[in-house]
Length: 204
Image 1: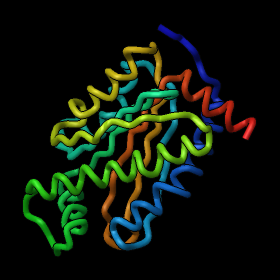
Image 2: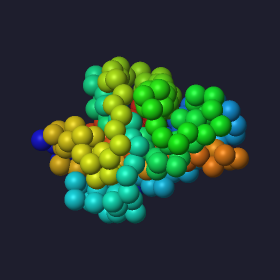
Image 3: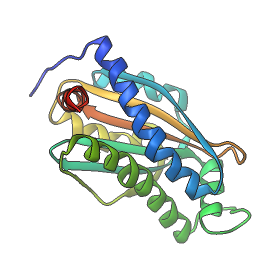
Image 4: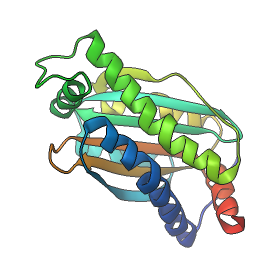
């Protein structure tokens, strides 16, 4: 099991690289989904062990979230979680299905949210990484669940922690300027794979 560390400067550089991917690919994809201007903020890119994740999920403790989960294989191992509160999920599902509002999430609403997560994570962010680095990245089908964040993040963490003692977590918020729909992204990497991204950034 690897035990590679990353420097503060490398975390700053990763923040800049991820920001460029999200700004150029993920935000426009979200904007297209909701039919209006969207903006984003990166709340942090940090290296941590598994215990450190507890501090990350603390602000959302005990609140039920609607989540879409993807994982990758190939040249890089990445776990990704797109999640939102119920009110935001219902507003987004309504927009995606051409409705003014939704009181509850039906099967069509679930499918549309799963596909939206797939577009934002696999179709935009992963494509940006692959196009920038040249790495082969194979993505799983999106999984959808309604659980607390502690439960939602278990599978993404397990996928990464099976191969490393530490991980790099990027926290991203993307939101519609007018509608206020906000989604949260957790992008989870092995430290070794972030080094790969950084090395390609230096030579690219």
